[in-house]
Image 1 (tube, protein in one colour):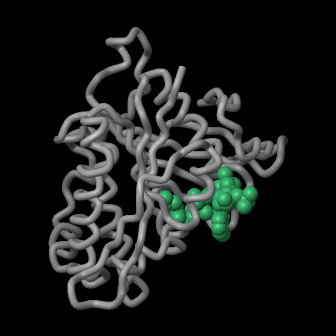
Image 2: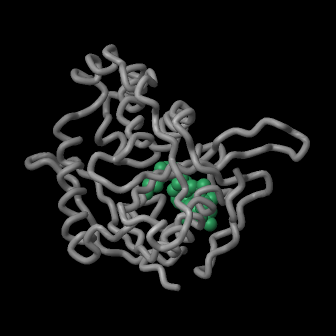
Length: 257
Ligand SMILES: CC(C)(COP(=O)(O)OP(=O)(O)OC[C@H]1O[C@@H](n2cnc3c(N)ncnc32)[C@H](O)[C@@H]1OP(=O)(O)O)[C@@H](O)C(=O)NCCC(=O)NCCS
């Protein structure tokens, strides 16, 4: 599926390289999503903070991330909808095969585009009998997972929740699009893939008249700033009594007509 990649009014970082296509993900992309996530996200220090034992337990890490990320393709119990996008890359024009190199996961509020007369991009959800809905092995394993630091995971969750309330919800309520995750495979970075995803997300948010909020890593921050995202303050994640900490930057873009 080709999606319009025309540049937004805010200055794009760069045009995506030839051969890149942005498309909506489906539940069949879960393994691609996990592959890309496990390749890209460890470049962000919060990943090692939350999952410091991932290299000791790589299989467990993968199974549990996969189990957790399957929710991106299920209806959101809290309301709203998630949009998973991929950039596929075709190395040369004559090749028929493409591979996903970059992804984003965003959350949009329940307010629908239909209400505003737009067509809603539908994320395909797992069918009730899809194997990802029934995995006793991974449920047991992930209940006692050894790849993470539970204290750090909880500190991260609390800090992000508090910052979401204080810096975003207090201002926008539910009416915000939230970019949850963005990553590009390390072998394909700095070619405009993440910019193409951002450009599409900004276009979608603009059509729905929604601001976009996110928590940026140090790698993502300059990229978002170039798209006009404003700094809404530093978020420190730290367990009381520990020296180790990670910082994120709350950022928001108030899209205009
Ligand atoms: C941030 C990230 C998604 C950018 O993906 P990308 O496809 O390379 O992005 P683009 O090519 O569209 O834009 C490149 C810009 O991203 C930033 N960037 C990309 N790689 C970077 C790196 N190794 N160090 C610092 N900044 C980097 C720079 O601003 C860069 O612009 P420049 O090349 O002109 O300096 C990618 O680096 C990534 O997956 N990082 C690890 C996970 C992460 O931090 N995700 C963001 C969470 S908020």
